[in-house]
Image (cartoon, rainbow, N blue to C red; front, side):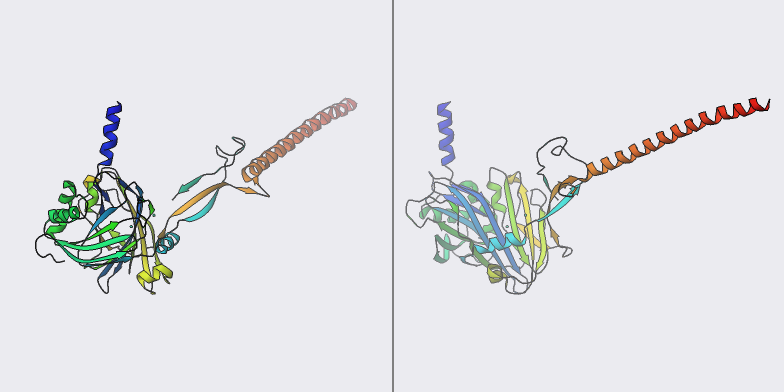
Length: 370
């Protein structure tokens, strides 16, 4: 058993590629890294045909360096994003909390229990030339070494990564083939802590990737390589309410928020401009990643219907400093019934007493007459 457990642990360390949302993470052979959460925002400007994807990873593991690969349909510009963007998006799309009263006591209420009820029920981002890999741009952005690449063969991308100290698994090479056939380009990002010897851990600075595109798309195909269930949280900023064209083999996409932002400010305004924009927040689960069969195409919804998730907090209906209304009601009904019963009993006693008094008097009158 010890040998088996040791072999299992060693196998978990030799994992050169990880699917994560719209890209793939590649690390050294004897290192490991996991993506705890990936949050993405897509900005689509229909007037200019420009798409921007801002991504932020929260990672853990013992890797001192890693590479992340993302396919893009056209030549991309890459720069650091503003972390405040996601704080602003989370604030705008936060669920609305509402209270609702209920009449009859439940399991947590007196007289069933002396404890307090604390229940809530819920009603959420080119061209190819020559053999090998063409490096069309490379720059250092904070902790990231960003290379923008072209490739005519998936294996060529693997060769480039290998020369830079990484390995590309056969499965990932095959996963990239559809993008090579469509002449997409790639953004390859080397992640390294600013201090030597430190492992990649925590929330990384966001990256902002900009490219021209006829229709907005969120690359998802590489996520089919994942061996565990995946989830997608996506903010879409456009002129209208947007939605994925299909479920891509996952659960049905769920809209968590849809609404117009009339006056963007701060990091959001820097991404979208000062004019109004429509914000849609989408959440989707992929229980079987192997069923993912393409990339998310984002299309305009039938109507710009606003929506906000509501989280309800149920509370017992009380008045007068905490007196349950049901207790007052039941007590009042019992008092009325008691009063009615008392009145009926008194009336019945009076009726019987009156009958007894009238009976003998009539008899005496009759006897006197005789």
